[in-house]
Image 1 (cartoon, helix red, strand yellow):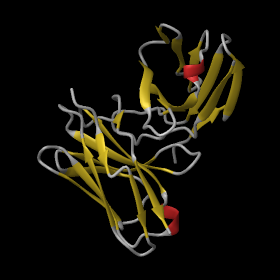
Image 2 (cartoon, rainbow over the protein chains, first blue to last red):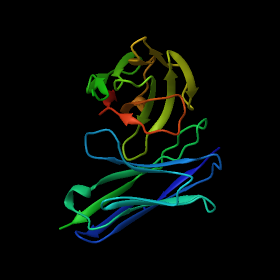
Image 3 (cartoon, rainbow over the protein chains, first blue to last red):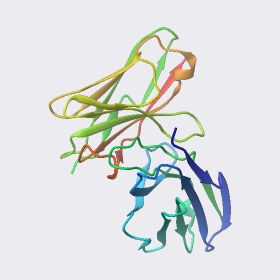
Length: 111
Length: 114
């Protein structure tokens, strides 16, 4: 079956530093690459997404980069703040393929 | 714009019982998906409904079933509950049938089976 791997599973960074989370997928039909943030007691919320016709997208402190040849995409958070502490999931998808979520990355921001 | 709402927020059931979880989709969205999220794991796809028809199913047994109503709200039913069914159940709505669009999640129903 199709596979989605997310690394690292946990990440602790000093406030103000950058964090990078990588997602590797196997389904070559994937053409939509979102990142979701899940805070305690809440459902996942979309924070940024990219489609396969672009290599990079940025929204303030958050960016996503895509390498479709290598089948991976990454979430970049710069100038991290305490409110960035959460669990982050990737969920690559194609128009007809099943959505598979990564296993999540627990990000902790140290004061 | 009304977001996705789920009820109840928490539920405790006994093994062998049946449960119904409910979801109201975001206004303008005609597709609803259900996910099971075990503690410390990513959401696992159960099934999706588009315009009242099942439109895809994950690796879950037939005792997991669902419905979508004309107003696009949805129910997830689980029969013969097992201890391993204890999890957070998430509902997500999206504006179309295709899977390559953003999912809008509710805050989930925490089900505990004892």
